[in-house]
View: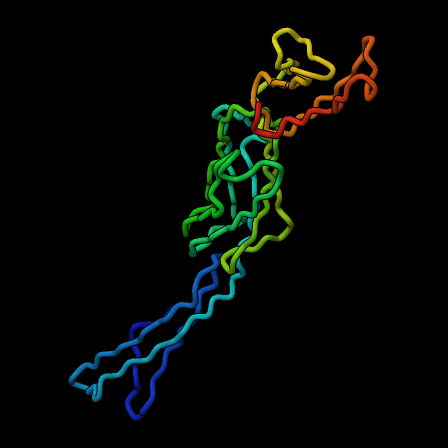
Length: 238
């Protein structure tokens, strides 16, 4: 507050008024009061031009911020949820919250999410959307773990963390076993003496699949034939 008139009593050389800061509850930048003056030409002259600047130092701490999500589970097939940063009190500054993303899901492969939330000056909250990316892989349910950090415009009073589970919409693939020779017979010593034993998935998996083989019959392993007892189907292969 500041009176706009200064009176200098007759017989005095000085007159003064008081400039007082007004306390508020909003975080803001330091501000300036630029004071110019004019004189009643009948009583004084301004020579040279007079100007003074007073800086109002902000003493309101940055507001606390909390992190929340709309849903803790979303479907892989076009599922989404909101991620919201909310201030305890309104700020006169744009507030930027930085998100750190971990978990078993991979950003830009399994989901989309901006890594910053901006809360506009004068608002209490800002929102971004986490969207699942649909694929044709069996990859089980996956998690997105969201942590946050504040810059100088806000304060993380207590650690904030949220977890979203992306629910896989593919069934566990089935596996079939086949051999490469149509007659399903091979010779002991000459001609066709070997055949491929192949495991094939019904759908691509996001994981390595290990198929364990067992043998029986009248032939004896390592005496009459050799056969590895595991088949590895790499992730992404059928």
